[in-house]
Length: 281
Image (cartoon, rainbow, N blue to C red; front, side):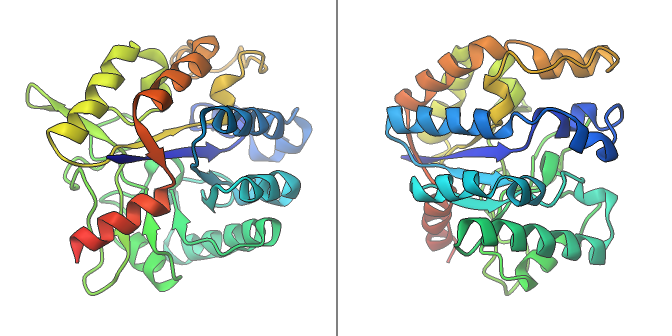
């Protein structure tokens, strides 16, 4: 079964863990590492022979257009991660629409291809944003991968379906939630990111295998370029929980990625969505 491999392209200072301690007005004055880290991801994918989807901030695309061109040139899908990592539930419907349009314009100009996929920053489409999927459909998106169907202190929509669904009646838009696994009556995160980085590799291998074999569904896996960069700056005044989440086991991440990529079959998100859309028809 082909699983979806994806990268959320944002710099180390743009993450949710630091949003209360690093002001957006200060971003231009901080050392950027997103291009070097994303290039390292491209090399990793070339070495392991996989194609993936890069959900990219418009802010990054505007400042690093050559990176976007390299991603497209290597055969990967380029998709939208919004403009500047503002969570969807912090916006109203019209500001969300404006954010989508601004990001898409920057990404398409840099990549020279149409953007049809979207991932909300921090999986922030949930029960508070009943208008978000409708706007995505109106704006011509083919799919979204913006829902985390679990309980989490930063995000989560536990009532949402765990696997692909059509969120807007009468519209072709497909929502592809990030992967979770059911264990002893609980829904646990199993789709990558910090959970993959900090938990034992064996858990993720088991969880993805279970989703494929038992649920008969593809896994939706993600990570960030900064997660393979142990040399990134440290923010000493961030809360302890934020520092633990952000900096723990960065040096182990690349090796774990190589193992999980070689263990399962992977492809671009749009490829997986096409198969899921056919099944939903």
